[in-house]
Image: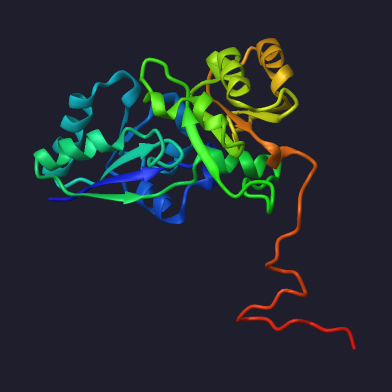
Length: 255
């Protein structure tokens, strides 16, 4: 019996899937992909005879049934997830169901959209002396968020923040971040479909971003990036400082 292979599809650009993920996709007999969240161009890597299922219209039991049907027939089954499945990928519930049916699996990581978004902007979340931590979170919606993980509480840290699955509530997001301590002039970037051909980038401040998003009519598939890492203030790292000695480099002295 074969295994089910979970593969991170990457943020959108079909060339941003890992090489290992690409090879698995090319050899697949069955692919179950995550609907509108995965760029369908990735499916062009599949064999012509590969059976393809869009999980957007399937429930959990139906997904697992198709996986089981495939592996029982000794077929290569790929579960193609968005970005990297370790962030908002709903992978845990699928794995638990596979374990119940004694079906083995592998996991091949992908490039998360929050990394694709940073690359599109050419920014670093961890700017020396500005921010050395990144909070990845979301606003409560149909899926609740624990009270201790509210946007307001996280805002008190004043560190780099990436907010998933919340663009539809941008006004509430702004209210919570301001209430938590971010200043109205804090830099914000909203990236719609990072690395996709239709990508949009809106760079603004907390006090202005909601109106701009409303004008652009962006209501889904966008990340909200917040923090001074997006600002103009920065410091060079010590890593490449000529006066900073470490085990691979001695201090250069002026003769």
